[in-house]
Length: 72
Image (cartoon, rainbow, N blue to C red; front, side):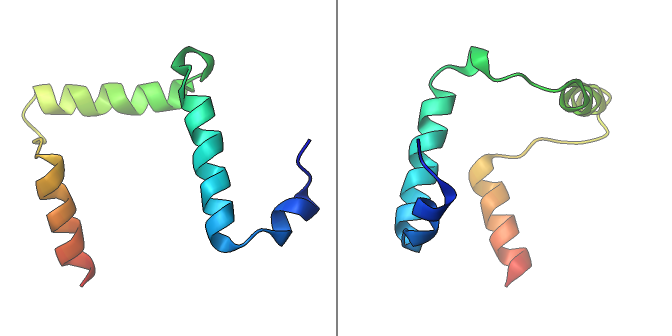
């Protein structure tokens, strides 16, 4: 069992590596991850808004460029 004291002793990079390893393990079986109803509701609202033409979808690479430009 990993204890908090052991985690505190890790370097920043080691903590990131640990976080990535844990996420990789959790995401390996997506059926085990329960999606809360509020999250499903938001996704449904956004899909409906898209279908009504109220919002548009852009490519992820374009979205990243827009985000980077906005924070500069």
